[in-house]
Image (tube, rainbow, N blue to C red; front, side, top):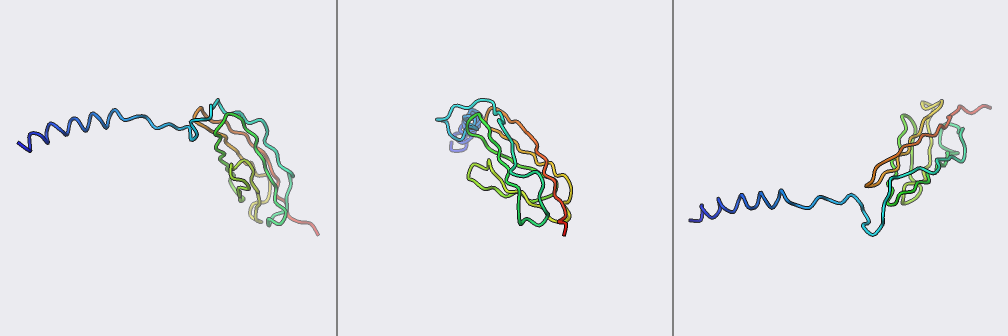
Length: 126
């Protein structure tokens, strides 16, 4: 009898698990979100010396609510400067000389948008 009850109970569990609520990608349900839009992507300098002593500070201003910022560069180092991740410090070593294309993606539950800025890492002249 116990086996029969168990066999009847398993399909019910499977049905309940299949009907579970879809996870909400909006981290703050009290905030209305719209498709993200990057209003500006700026750097305090577009040319830096390698070594990191005087980094470039890059700021992304995006709208849409509940924005998550994702930064990417092929060579160089990106360090977040604020809790939102909208401002970063960019440095590079000697192996990173030349133009570096830094991508910032702003995303939320409605989508994502990407913009790129160029920072030139140069060798110091004496």
